[in-house]
Length: 118
Image (cartoon, rainbow, N blue to C red; front, side, top):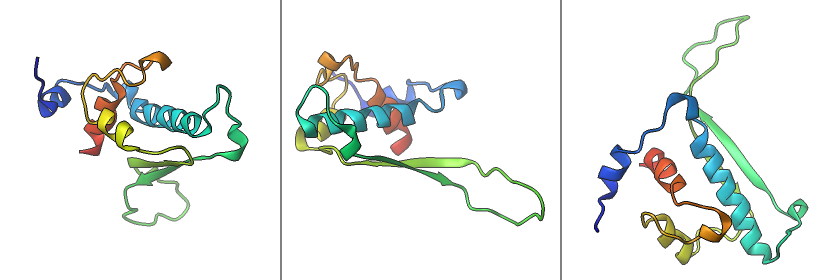
């Protein structure tokens, strides 16, 4: 059975109340990447990092004495894990792959994360 990525993305809904799921999925991937780098069952995370940068819209004007919450445009996540190896990148780009099924992954997060990368 063939699948078309653009059609799958169009049919993958992200409800407003679940808006943080792409960030959650990306951070979980960072944790797994660090685990892969360490090559042990219980890695020592003190020697590794996951950095999350929040990108917000530019401030339009300065209003003295008020706090204006600018909408979030996206996130940038970096980690000290193994990274997007060829195998990880190929898995990310292939729908419903069972690459991390032993870790309980279902391969759905890539659709939500990728949907917001495009």
